[in-house]
Length: 338
Image 1: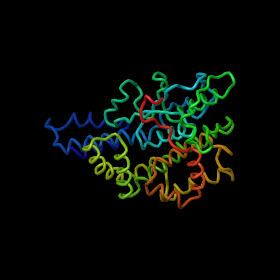
Image 2 (image 1 turned 90 degrees about the vertical axis):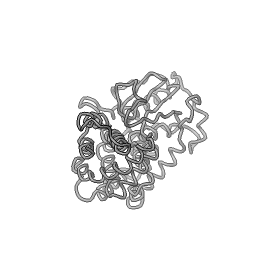
Image 3 (image 1 turned 30 degrees about the vertical axis):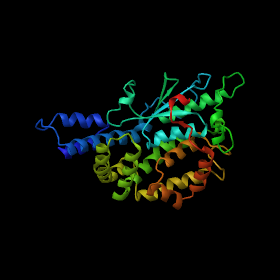
Image 4 (image 1 turned 90 degrees about the horizontal axis):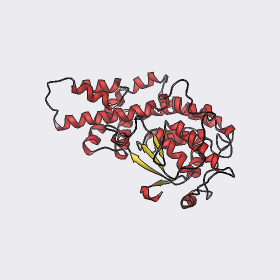
């Protein structure tokens, strides 16, 4: 039964529900022992989180382009409240947090249970990140969220726009103000797509490259995620082992050839060369592509993949500049602080 649960997870595109449904439809009807139940819950949680980490960039129709600004319209004012529904270490969620932190937009976070997703019971859309503006306007897909928020900020700079000043956070930015918005010509749509379609995938394969790195990754995921004790232990042991065993399948799925670490290094060098001697892809100020690439890398802080990326490629100087630009987090610990 446990093997079939693992196979279900490996082939699942819908996360935890596939596993739970499949397990409930087989066997003798006897309940699983405590550890067995915990292992299944841990597996289901890992499946939900992993499928979200992999699928965000693919969760659009061919007609949709989350990187383009031409079909989006700003509301005309900045929201009074921003709520981010997330997994703490999901790279796509970290993209959104990097944008909010750079521009000092206060936001509160709701950590989603990757199994039940009860925190999103109000929404038909069940993947993270989800952003709720003023408790009513819902934004989905990390790139779409960032595009829309960029336009809201851009519109707020106009002379007739209503602009809310988040002065409580101004001292947290290195230059004492909200991050400078790049001109629309410097959005670098092609590099935004590169982040989702190449860079995230190479990082995903690398963090499960060896048994040690897979356990290291799950230690980090389960420490920061919304897991109960039993789920945490099951996810660490079973999830890490399983994802390590599936790493070659992910490599094939994403079309990564040869040594996966060298493939990641090559992508990092592509990025560094793409700067063309400028501080950022956006020139003197970070573009949306800069923010998104930074958020993805920051999501794996503390892992061997992060360490090797910083020490064996030329991406580190750019990353350090982004760290300085983004500054401290503008996350709120209490929703009443907004």
